[in-house]
Length: 152
Image 1 (cartoon, helix red, strand yellow):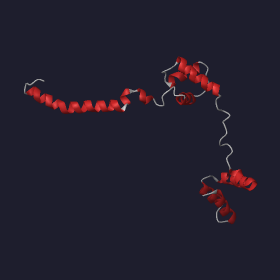
Image 2 (cartoon, rainbow, N blue to C red; image 1 turned 90 degrees about the vertical axis):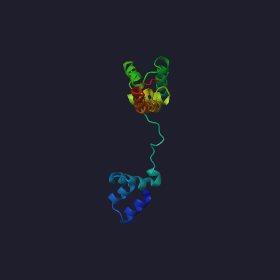
Image 3 (cartoon, rainbow, N blue to C red; image 1 turned 30 degrees about the horizontal axis):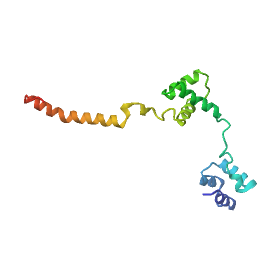
Image 4 (cartoon, rainbow, N blue to C red; image 1 turned 90 degrees about the horizontal axis):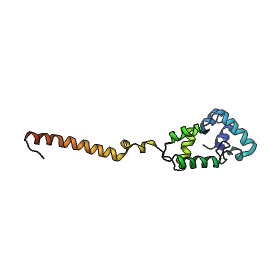
């Protein structure tokens, strides 16, 4: 439901403030804030002006570039976890998640460690299944031939 409809229902007395807020999917306090903004500035007052703004906490571009160039120059092939341990010892102040995301965005580190483990790959699972099927099928045949004293 749109705000104007909920507001009109509340103004006409068909809805209580709690009901109108529930219809919009917000708490009653948020609905009261919406009312104040709507009465002051109209629909323009309901627009979220934070959308599209760059965060003040965002890392500078030169810090991101230094991180990725250092990884490519000296630590190529390291996992994000091992590189992060070095990064912290070298004086880095960002979080592990930030370092990992920046390395992945620059295509320095893989998105998942599972791709590095061959026993997790689909091909390895298929090969393992084929070997298991071969053993299940061939074992009784080989035992039968062995009983008949026939060698292959």
